[in-house]
Structures are given as C-alpha cells and as structure tokens.
Image (cartoon, rainbow, N blue to C red; front, side):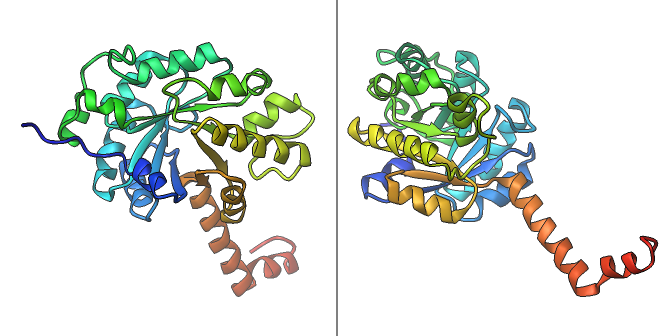
Length: 273
C-alpha cells in the first residue's frame, strides 16, 4: 500500500465552514516567500503572471514554503496548459487562472488541471511526487481550479462559467474587474467603494454560492477583507509581499523623520542638510 496523498488544507478549512486567508508573493525570492509563509496564512499564492519572477524562481519558493504547512498555489500567466501543468508538477495545490471569459474557456482550464478521465493533464509530477507523498491520480480530488473573472464578457457569462463541472471557485481581481467592466471610467485598484462595483463583487459571491463553488477576492486591507467575508467570500487575499514591504518601510521612514524633525530642519535651511 502506498502513502495516502496529503489533503488540501483549504478544502478541510472550508468543510468546517471557515473562511481562509491567502498570502501573495510577487517577489522572486525563496527567503521572502519563506517569511510570508511563516506568518500564519492558510494559503500562499505565487504570482507568476504579474510577479517579478518566473518558473525558475517559483520552484525554490515552493520548496522554501513547504515547512509552513500552508496550502501553496500559483497564479499562472495565462490559460496555457504548459504553465498550468508545470506549476502543478512543481507542487502547487491550486491554480488561479486569469482572464476566463466563457464557459468553454473555463472547461478548457479545468481540463488542464486533472488527469484522465476527468481532464487531459499529462503525468510527470517531478517535484510534487517528492514533496507530496502519495501524489498521483489522487491529486484530481485535491487540486483547486480557480478562474478569474475580469472582463465584461466574463461577467456576462458569469452564471455559465460558475456552473462549469470541476471548477472549484472564482477569484476576483478588483483592478482588472474594474478596468474590464467600467472601460476606463474608474481607475483600477483594490477595495472598491463604488456602489456599482460593490454590487458586482457581491453578485459574484452570490453566483458562486448558488453553484456550490468558492468565492475568492483580492483585497488591500484586512478591514475590507472582513467585509468581503460577510458578503459570502470564502477566501480573501490581503495585500502581498511587495506592498507589505513598501508599506512597512514607508511607515518606518515617516516615523523616523517625524521623531527626529529631519524634514522640518531641512526646510528651515532651504532644503540643504
């Protein structure tokens, strides 16, 4: 008898009716990833799409985060079978796929996630077989397929996409969702306050619930994330490594300047110091 495959801890958390907190890594560095994973997130996602990294960075990041016990995921650059399967082979237990606009695209994405007879994933879990004992076709039941709804077409086809067999959830990126649906009338960004965007974000959660899949939202602050949980979201991402680093550094610099009066003194001296 071989070892039983490790269970996806996000699924276990959701089975208890509890929401999940996701961390976000955009810096291609194993130590930064290890620091993020050690902070108590339920899951951590490596952003291969927009992050300053590629597969050669992502692999050691997965290795560095293994000890944390968090569910490790990746946002891939596109609905590309090669990248999706390679990220899974590296040990990702969930894939966030951008720009899913139709039911057909959602079906295509889902097919890349699972081995036959439920999909067309090619077998070769190079690192996953080492890092996740018992890895094999059992992965079909453990990996999470999360589609991003980001465009007017995606919103128009929301109900059909959410009903796709094998799709585990929808991940909302508010910046692209705003760009895609408002066509430049509103600037991109997180934590939307506009009534029309709040209505849309809440509608996505309702459609997910109606189809028994998970609703996930990228947020900028814990306060907004808590509000999203009240709206019915099952997973929220709060910030990310680059934003958290910038924010902490900016706060430290600002506090130092206030405490020492350095900026005030330089202004008194005509900007010279």
